[in-house]
Length: 215
Image 1 (spheres, one colour):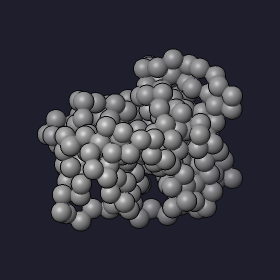
Image 2 (image 1 turned 135 degrees about the horizontal axis):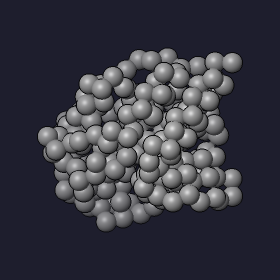
Image 3 (image 1 turned 180 degrees about the vertical axis):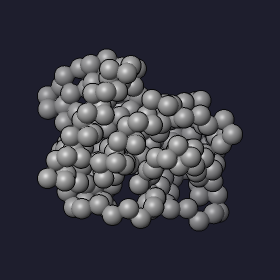
Image 4 (image 1 turned 120 degrees about the vertical axis):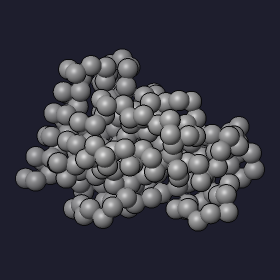
């Protein structure tokens, strides 16, 4: 469902867009972010650019990654496309609004990956358990290939357990769950992101990666 318009689609249900031209050295860690409910307030299948509102909590984390020279990569499931609620052109408009609002705040994203496949989808997008759809790690792995990312040292922030599961399956060691609870899994730690103290821990982790990357 490409709406007859040219989009950065690598297949009918996968969008991969490089934003800007910032250069990163090989084996750099990344900050992976879910979009709806993490960067912007989730309005249940966001489809109106005029309704997009950023979650201010995430701005300092993106700013810290930008300052540290760490790529910021958005990885977002978009089952609304598979379900026929809207098409890729609407996604492009909404996502463009998100990026514009971030730019207005002086922070930047380096790559956006979106997966529209869903078992309840119609036509070619009706795929169950597609490797690119979180909780599968495909979007993170593909971003790592394209940007030379060190997944093991990377961080992920999201508002659903599927985000954390995708991070774990991709080989990350820790993630921050918006309004969630802390949990320890084999080789992966889920940290809550509820208040300023939690945000401070995330910022410290990002800044540490930046120092390691420069050493």
